[in-house]
Image (cartoon, rainbow, N blue to C red; front, side, top):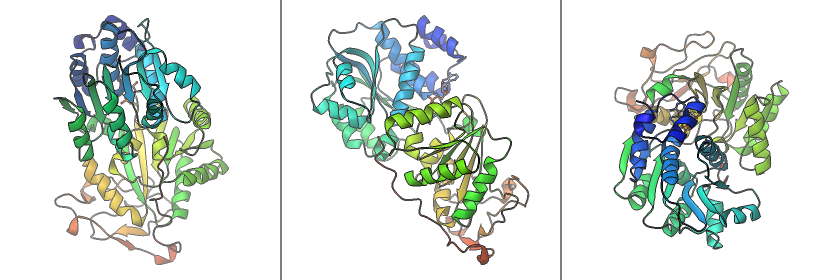
Length: 444
Ligand code: AMP
């Protein structure tokens, strides 16, 4: 399978060649012909699968090969959940559109001044990438003209709903021409996402790329049981000092947790910076640029801010706090193992997080192997015998047969595991430390 066999036009083929893409990924092979044919598409694909090119390439081709109506406003609208993802989609579009002469791209996101965006909306645009909140704001002030709109793409739709953008998205969609083509990408198509898709898409081609085993195979995953936050922090510092570490993202559950941890990592001699939604957009952009350039080695981020980050040198993702949803886990670990590299995803599980861990294993269909780090004896272990710490020794995974397939048939009695303390004297800080359930919302 080649990009040429998907009937992409020469300027796009030459851009792909320049970008070093040799052949389409599975999602590209399925989605490109459907979008090119003008069909509505509902595609279930995780981040890291090449989904951005899967919707941008055929959209660019349709825009290039069809007559552009006169007037102002966008011909294609891409809605993304975060500012960072919007920027990334725009950058990908300009990469693929390099050889297309008259293509105009724009971005409308929050956290930046309005006047340049007003000006942008006065012009004819080919592709506009926007986050829902700020875009709706412009719409309600009467600044958006949809007369030329041909296609709407909802990227990471599941995430948009998680972040509370459902109403905004529906209001935007209601204002678009009913003749539009609609393309929706989501990591899952269950529950509210299926309902939304049912309302917005007309006879869509459904594309589901099975959970990317090949992709996950490049990412080794394991979990450390920890008894308290002090131990968790000490283990993270020890792991950051290991030689094999390139760049790392450490995920925390809260914004102030990210700030505090970035400071602590800095005090331990690493260049570290926090990234979260309480930061001004300029500071977020600067931090990301430093991380991309490698001058910041460890990025400590909340889920929302780290969405879509694509930096090939990320060798490790740490789930310092486990994520609130299993989908977030998949998105987080997808920050490593990019562009054909391998990566490591290391999670820490406090006693209170065992339910979250179980949900993640059920969602991914893979048990996460346990590891014990030399110098950090495990004091919290699951009962019911099935899952326990690996034999002592740095980074040695427990043999597969010893793992509990929690939550699946044949798992531990009751479908789960509970924890016992090995040496209560090491657990003076209480079992769970600070809750990971503090809100991180409102970031876009
Ligand atoms: P995405 O899932 O859209 O975030 O893409 C993940 C990464 O894969 C990005 O760095 C893309 O540039 C890269 N990529 C996308 N499609 C291909 C392809 N066909 N061959 C090689 N790399 C690709």
